[in-house]
Image (cartoon, rainbow, N blue to C red; front, top):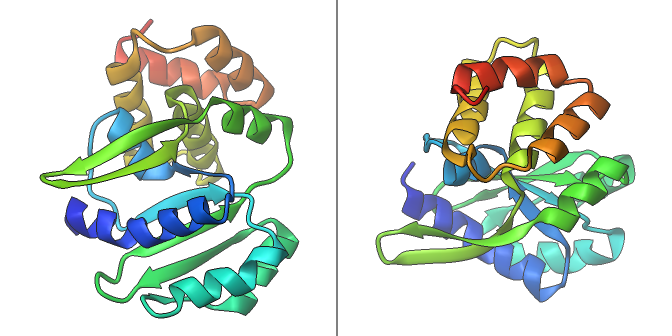
Length: 195
């Protein structure tokens, strides 16, 4: 999957979220690739605050170009879980994670920033989470998956290596402690040569 395909699949979704003023940010491997070491990915992770009042409009605007299921969206909103849409032209999957109302999620949303994703002449500007939050959320996923995902670990180490001079270490260490990922963070810092 080329970066152009990713941008083509993302553009209508991002335009929709921004048109409806729905808070969102890009996380996952798109975020870690843009802030660390790039790698191929088969999906886009969007963390968002979609509510039930948005469902009809989302389906209406995406139905022509995506596989979209309104019941899946409603269920995800009610259970603060996930749903996806699949772009017809590229078969690219966009995963939506309904934001939980936790102190940490609130902190992530307060720190998001605009970033341009570029492929040749194709550019899309999106909200993306801060590098510290990419690291922390990937550590959470890494642990939840049994601590065996080499891709997740490499993403974490890659962001640490590339962003080492700009990281807010106090924020990173404070949240690592609160989120019970401090030991794994220390290992990642060592692997990245940041300690």
